[in-house]
Each structure stands twice: as C-alpha cells, then as structure tokens.
Amino acid sequence: MHGKILLLSQRRISDLVAFCLAYEFEDTFQAVTDAERIDATDFASLEFSRRAYKLIRLATGSPRLAAGLAPPPRGKATLTGEFELFFPVFSNAFELYSLATIPDWRRRCRKAACFITEVWTDQLPEYLLELLSEFDHVFTGLQHCVDDVARITGRPCSYLPLATDVLRFAPATPDQPRPIDVCNIGRRSQVTHRALLAALQHRFYYYDTVAASGTDLKQRTFRVDNAQEHRLMLATILKHSRYFIANRSHVNNPEFTAGRDESSARFYEGIAAGTVMIGEAPRTAEFKRQFDWPDAVIHLPFDSPDVGSILAELNSNPGRLATVQDRNVREAALRHDWLYRIRTVFEVLGLSPTEKMQARADQLAQIAR
Image (cartoon, rainbow, N blue to C red; front, top):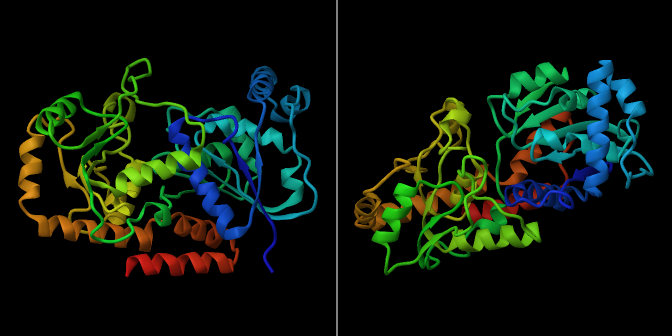
C-alpha cells in the first residue's frame, strides 16, 4: 500500500499568471496520488520572517542560528502522522523560505524532493537554496542551472522538463473547428505583432492587451483569481487556434539569457492543444530530443514583418497542417503530460506508481490513438 504524500503550494500567496503552471502540476500530482496539500498563507508574515532570517544568516554565517533566532511566520502547519514523500513545488527560488510553514517536515517524511520550475544561474539566492540541504533530490524546470543548484544545496539535482495537463488541453476531435487564426500571448515582437494586425484585419487574431511591464517593458504578466479557471481558459483558446506563436524562454531579452536557451511552457501547451507552432525554438540538443518530429515548431524569426505571407504559404498546404496538428497531440499524450514527470520523480526516489497513475496513462493512450 502506498504511503501518504504531502505537497506544499504557493497558490494562496502567489497569483501571477505564469505560476498557474506549477499549480496545474500540483493538481495533477494530487489527482494521481491522493496527496495531501498544505498551502502557504500570510505572505506578509512569511516575508518578515524571511528578511530577518536573511539578515541573521548573513551576519552570523550560521543557517542553524538564523533559523533559531528569526521570528517564525504565522500560520505554521502542524503535521499529524507520517508521510512517504514530501514534494513542494516552487515557481522560483525566492519561494523556498515558505518551507518554514512546515517546520517538522523532515522528521515526518521518509523521502523528500522538490521541483523549482524556473531558476536562472544569476538569480541563485544561496541563503535560500541551502534550505534544500535536507532533501533527497532537487528537480529544476530549466537545464542550465542544474550543476550550480547541486553545488549550493549539496544534494543530487536533475532537470525535469516542464509539461502540461494533456487531458485538459487536447482537442475533443482531430477535426475540431479552429476559428482563431493566430494566438500570440506573453512576450512578443512588436514587429511581428504589427504585421499580424495588418494581415489579419478580417480574421481572428488573439493577443494580449495587458500593458507591458518590468523595468525593460518586455514582460506581459498579470494576476489571476483562480489558477484552474485560467488554465481552462488557456486550453480552450489553444484548442480553437490554428497557429500558436511559441518561442524559447525570454526570447525578447537576450541580455538576460546570455545564450542559455531554455524551453518555455508554450511548447508543451501548444502541442497538447494540436496547434501549429511557429516561432524560435531553443537551439539545444535537449529541445531536439524532446520535440524530435517534423514541424514540431516551424521556424518564424522573432521579428517577422512578412509573417502574413509566411502564413499564406503555410495555409496553401492544408495536408501538412493536418499532419502537424495530429502528430503534436499524439506526441504530447505519449510524452509530455505531467504524468510522465511524476513518474520520473517516483523512479528517481524508488517509489512504485499508483493505480491512478496507470489509469491516467490509459486515458492518454486513448488520446494518442
């Protein structure tokens, strides 16, 4: 019989749209393992405690002393019983201090691993990463940072690719109508965007109208009331889109990435929904391994003033488009659902899969057929 599994979620204190992906992963984890979930709460108290911990840690050089002297955050959880696995999910390394929400997690959990969906090597807060020194394994959603995270934490670390809820994103039928001609959300090229506005005046072009943000005005982010509702809406939009512009992470900020190409969530969402993805893919062997079929991403330069004529040429070959759409859904169902990432976690930790994991695999196989 499977032991109990414990998750720690940030969903009640972090509501940026990008973080909905992590909460979808948690929801899938719960669905296939019956895991118990604790939500971090009282962000202000947690931040006050973190700042105090950071000051004491830097002043004394002692994590143990800092943990003992920092005021504990309000809303701490008290665990009852024992757990087979503790698996917190973080959208970035700055959320790691929420582990203080469950002070006795290590004593109560036989095994412990965590997943940080996005962490860049020049944004590695060592005083927070060292909090992971008691974990059995650390998984990261970006590949380039694995060695640095392993060095700082002193724990085994490996790359766990992003994925999506294919059961939610897959179209109901292969020939489902796609009234949205092009979907272009998140970071975007103004050159390509203006060209699409001109080319698709009498068609359905779906794009963000939220203001660009960040000091460089290169982000398009916003907050959401309900992560599950947002993911459902995104899946519905993509299932009804023919083309989906998908680019490597931070494509419009090469100074930040400095040649560190990474796969954004867009690629997993786009194939699961059966869109024809156009854009700039990561120039890495790992991306080619994960998306190793023809036309998984049809190359479109980030700045494409001639995107209208490129789309017209693609539209002249409906057979090619139909093949791309079918193959994308099939590969997503067989390789890029969250189930396969959960399986990897279980294999690394030596845990046996649950019956519900097999049941989900059967559902995915049905979609692939």
